[in-house]
Amino acid sequence: QFTHVKSKIVKMKLAALALLAGSASAYQVTPTMTFSLGKFGKKAPAKAAAPKVISGSSPSADAWANAGPSTALPFATAPATLDGSMLGDVGFDPLGFSTVPVGAWFKGFDGREGTLGDLTWYREAELIHGRIAQLAVVGFLAPGLFGTLPGNEWTGVDAYSKTNPLEAFSAVPGLAILQIFLFMTYLEVRRINIIKEEGENYTPGDLRIGQGEGRWNPFSLEYSPEAYEEKQLQELKHCRLAMIGIFGLWAQAQASGVGAIEQLSAGLTAPDYYAKAGYFLPEGI
Image 1 (cartoon, rainbow, N blue to C red):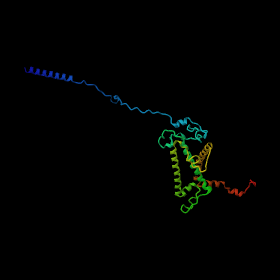
Image 2 (cartoon, rainbow, N blue to C red):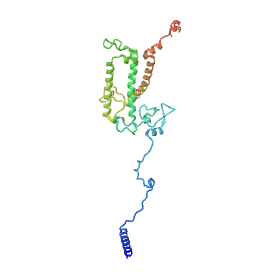
Image 3 (tube, rainbow, N blue to C red):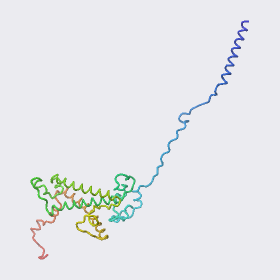
Image 4 (spheres, rainbow, N blue to C red):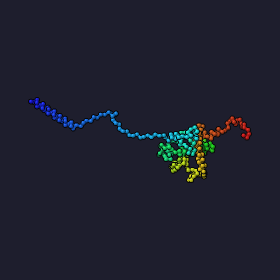
């Protein structure tokens, strides 16, 4: 009897468990299979589109690609930037300065990058350097030809007696050098102000000196347009010659330690053997 009752109780428990299991399964969410393939299975995030790079030749490369014959150097070529339209242009630019993208020089530093510069920049630099070189050539030759300035007790008796400019630079008083420096500063400031005022209409090397309305013209110069252009070309050639000449004068003074006139005078004097031999040419020659 007891066994029979126990058996019924066990069956009732099993039935209750079955009912509970069925109720729970009714509310169970069907599991979803998930898996991972690691770094190979994950989809990489979309990368930002790289900026499109537009490649092309530089202004310098274009200028050399369209190069033409050079008048100054027949065995070489001149970049296309030197087309002969500018006064004094003979196609001399073996280093390609005219092709360098420097931008419009009178606009300052803004907008220089990537813009082919106007040849006005180089012509201005050529004229200014050439004019300084012409003054330097006169300074190298004048003391030997016409003598030096007298000194005094304050400056020193021999302060201005050096005919070699390299020695004279360190012998003259410091105030004399300062005087030259201040005068040059004034001229440069004046030139820059003229450039700012005229902008794109500025003519290279124009210091408002010479013929023309509102200019300082102490010699009352009045050339025709053709003659004036010829004078401009003459100045340009003198500038170029002076820049070469001053380098030669400086190098020779540095090597010899004496002025140019002293060197020439020594080369033109009669040697001793000629004096001993006497004047052997026929009379009248």
